[in-house]
Image (tube, rainbow over all chains, first blue to last red; front, side, top):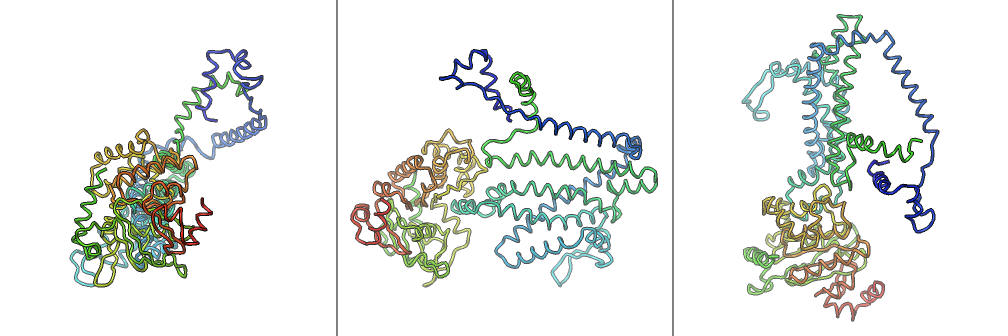
Length: 332
Length: 281
């Protein structure tokens, strides 16, 4: 399997010709003979079948006129589409960061020894996991009808600062607030499970060293929790990127909203426009997945005895060992 | 190790503390560890049923006993990882985790307890090293977190400590890349980094392969010869015989017998001790 594992065999073959060396090197006959791996013809047959099916699917996608690839090409880099993409990115990035921070706060409240904080956190998570995101967004959009102004001051007493809700709530802010409220509820559970996954002995060892609480969390517990948090949180972020398409309903023109809008104007182009949006979402998700790989790798330091190679390292290793593998007869 | 100065500092602090030092008078050194009437139950299970014990400075105390006798609970109570229902522990004359208020004991704030723990080392059965930090950072993290040393100074000191347990070449490795014995030696170095006056060992060799036990015990023996007070919960009778100044035999939450190794191990008087030793030896 691993390309590095193969290298010793090939270097040994360099100085000595394999035919004479094999019996001479070992103490008895057959002792140093190389084991030839089992041939697996079934594997090759399945590979060919899968490749043929895949080729058919791709051929259908490319040749079916229904998809109008020329129109797809026309729209893909249009400034109006890129403008929508930017809105999607902005909303997703803010909500992802604020949602994680909110999630950490909620998770810590949930894990605290204070029963009131626990209950408030539990109720928040319960509420925002129950209410559909679209309802939260529409509710916020109509917020100004419910509350005319927001004030900062003594609770139930006089106010020092008063904002009109309409001046605060641009469509962008409403979208980010709505998504963050929703995202926090889910990420709170992800963060909490990550913190719980850290061995109790780690808390004890940190306490026995007299490490202050805040330092314990930042340097000992949270970095270890991140190993469990990252995969689940990236899952949430990918869901979030696609949920941003709902902000269309609070009249924010994101990637999907723009495609939808253009589709109603150029009604013949609705399919290529949806494809444009889809491909951009696929690209965003792919970028996030690549980032995930490297972040996960970073936080697995110490958890694994040796870090797995990156895909680039794997590729380079495979290319380097290709001639040797041919010589060994791996492809025969 | 500059343990001497550390201990003097601890004594000075206790002079300002409340009346415990009066037990031995002002001139006498306070006991390194003193346990006063310790009681602890989990539901109906009386884990510690009234324990009084005094360990003098520089002594090596070995606590023996069958499983479930309360050894670990007692050890963990010394640095307040376990809270007592009644009674208290004092280290170098200072009550740990509690303070006297009139004739009652009040629990200290978490911050105060954490500060007290920096003067008491603890070595766990399962090492509990921080797997995401290098060996050197594991040793350096305590003094840095306590604000005693800069990161650079703590790492420098950490290298010295790793050298003293024979692991200076592993400074940049991660704990999981080490053998159990090496991990436990790192854990000892980590405990030493705070220059504690007392070090507690909770079955330090129980999770190790037999051939790795020796390397850890020899590090503990070296420590014993430096005059640090050690309290060791272990099943290694040979170690107890060789190193201990005081052997304490615990059963069902009570001290059944205590004395020198010669007294307790070779001439046990209590039938429970005899029975236990006949099974272990």
